[in-house]
Amino acid sequence: MTPIVDVRNLIKEFRSHGGWLRRGTQVRAVDDVSFTIAPGETFGLVGESGSGKTTTGRCLLRLIEPTAGEIRFKDMDVRALSARDLRRARRHFQIVFQDPYSSLNPRMRVGATVEEPLIIHKVGSREERQARVRQLFELVGLDPAAASKYPHEFSGGQRQRIGVARALALEPSLIVCDEPVSALDVSVQAQVVNLLLDLQQRLGLTYLFIAHDLRLVRQICSRVAVMYRGRIVELAPAETVFTDAAHPYTKALLSAIPQLTPGGRLPRIPFDAGGFQPLPLREVSSGHFAAI
Image (tube, rainbow, N blue to C red; front, top):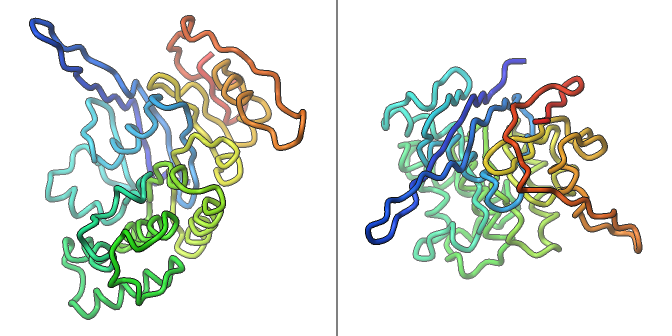
């Protein structure tokens, strides 16, 4: 099957600011990252804070500009797109941000927020756009009458549903979910995850799911890439990662997962960060790659 996303040798460097009479330094946040995502797949990208997973997702959409590498979406070379062509292409790939409190403009009614992508891309008449907004609110489980309210009048879970509605407005085929439930109460997280899974089935969506909750990733993702210090250190089907991890960092990460049964906590596996070597991925079994 031809992948919908093909990322090859992606690099993103940031320059840190130097002080008085001191030069800044280059920080490589994403270092030679490659992966593909199949149509209709939920591909998980996991790792600790600062591992480069969010930067990778934002480079994929060119919300931040990659330093080097190739990003292909369907038949498009995303890095080669002009500003005008990129704006047109963005209707096909969208993002759901982590924080539902800061991702919505507090001065805009939520209906106007959901309608805004349709206005930018000049989709339909005013009446058609408003009908689309009502449809989107119903699709994410909200009352269309609530479109006239402001973000502060909604709970965190409802705000995230509004963010999902905004991402769906232009009928994209790929959505980058950047830790979409980590800022929500545990009681609400399952509702939003179930909504995302339901929408995927109904609309044929493809997800890049960025998360640090490994139990959630195991539940919803078909394949998982584990990132550490900007590099992918392991990539395999989700169940393989959790039952037959090959890289020492992956093993250490899995050992930190809290266990639900009393006394069932796994023994912690230490990871020697000082001895980390950035090795290339190699296939250790069918479809299972590790940097060992």
